[in-house]
Amino acid sequence: MAISSTASGEVGTTEFRVNFKRDDAAISPWHDISLKDGDLFNFVNEIPKYTKAKMEVSTKEESNPIAQDMKKGKLRDYHGPIFWNYGCLPQTWEDPNVEHPVLKCMGDNDPVDVVEIGSKALEMGSVTKVKPLGVLAMIDDGELDWKVIAISEGDVLFSELNDVQDLEAKCPGVISGIREWFRWYKTPDDKPLNAFGFDEKCLSRKEALAVIEETHGHWKSLKEGKTEKGKLWIS
Image (cartoon, rainbow, N blue to C red):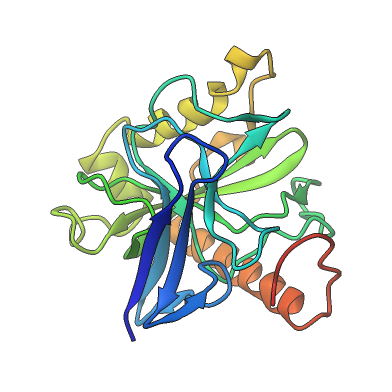
């Protein structure tokens, strides 16, 4: 069954949305797209590489379309382009009620973020199979905000990259580039630098898979009503 996405409204306005369908039925990109596809994971791309508009799956809106984030009544843009495709893993959730045993931070109440490092810009609203390579434990305003680093199945380096060590060897500077971009990106708005746990290391593929598994479990509890949903749209 084919998944498609369709844009409506004018780009750069509060009305712009990217909605998702499976065949002719409306679906949520957060809840209705499976986390895995075989041995790979489905990646919902919110922000194509080299763009600035801060787009995200709207977790509190019916059917969770992609919309431009707002802050204090204004649409949000990054102050410079992001250099990778950026989006999320469906059927994951960073539970704000659960404290990480080592980092002592709660989850940020969103699906797990993915930084896809492939050479091609992926379309907003595209769903692509990716391989996780590692994960950074970003701490943003006291909340844990995991950043899974992954590569898409169709990329020329897909077969050569399997873990953090491969990424450092074949794409030197990518991990530090991602870390520094996310460390600094809020500072033009007079916000403090973001921090990173585990001595700022990019954790291994094995640890990334453990993060994905744990946050998939949190999402299951949310969907099953075992965890209070608050204002989140989950039906």
